[in-house]
Length: 114
Image 1 (cartoon, helix red, strand yellow):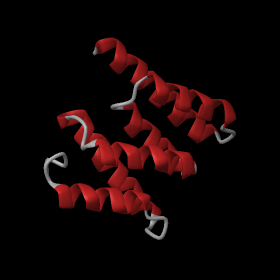
Image 2: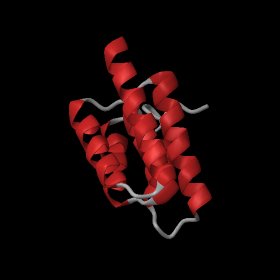
Image 3: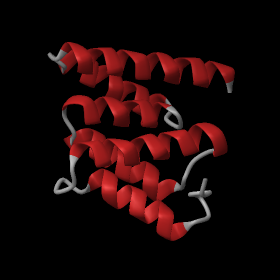
């Protein structure tokens, strides 16, 4: 497993795959999952990756949006929580609502534990 915080090319590749709308959804979701896993195991992959995920969250829909929400919950604070809560209020899709609720819960647990 690469340390994405130190491996600039690997981190950039993951961010590029996650944010490129021309890529297949399973590949984009896998890239987001890898960024999330890195954050959970080793900490933030870097501010540019976090910014890219925040931007992607604003544009994503469906399962990708839920994946991004869970990734953001690994590092986010109050601003992230507010964005997730607003998205939950507006979401109509049950699966997206469930993922957003899970992300909000994970963020709250992480912030309390920190």
